[in-house]
Length: 336
Image (cartoon, rainbow, N blue to C red; front, side):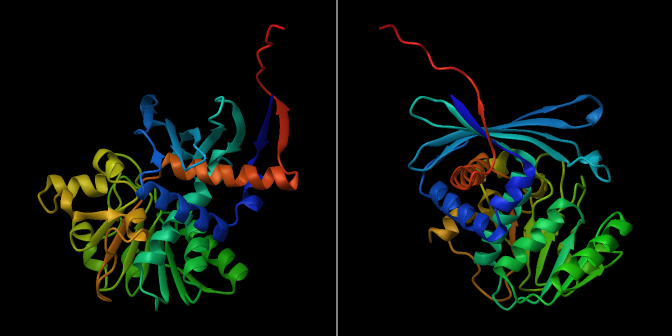
């Protein structure tokens, strides 16, 4: 049997942001219709807190796509040649359970995480937004800039803030020259957020980087950096002031300190989660009601998102000749 392997460089060309946003919207809609399965992820922490290994299985869609993402997360890789997220997405067919494709997980995670934020922004943010704040200056900062411009192309100003000022300045200089867009590096998160219509938190911080007191009426927030306990990017006021949405209630109840800490403090209860983004897309729950609403999308990342993105990559690779086919496994020889 043959398996198609697709590496990071090819993923970038086979999964442009606009296409991935469409794939994520379809996947989240399928989830809202009950057409997806994704058990809670299993996370193994390494000694001394140096990193974790996560396993995320799932299946999605009428074609019964199934698979698994196995990914290591090493936040200390910032500033090194290594990405913080490294691993593979394994895609299986469900007629016989055979492995059909292996796709680089780091590049999939980079693109699909921001694409889901793009979907959320498109349904929750105001249409007349002009200013974007990005907290963080790493891989997700770049991909979130891509996603925000894909769904709100009339953005005029971007402010970026990072715990590493040199990275923020490099981000602003490089991205402004590429995109012909006004991008400013600022030293304080409050300065970045002031006047912003959209805020994306893309940090590896374990403590809040965004205060609810900084948010102007009408702001939309994509909170993506804290994907498991005890990491947290939003303070209690930011959560309590908002119309609050998630990718998955199950994941939020299990893993999101951004929600669980305000709940433990009595500031919110389970009903504060108004819905999943797929439910908003399907019209099952309301999104933004008024222009002055503050909306928050808390992203934790779902295996079905990785699988759908990987399947899109494999389909394009197969049709264009990209990737590498290798012999892998064996077929049972039947008696004659």
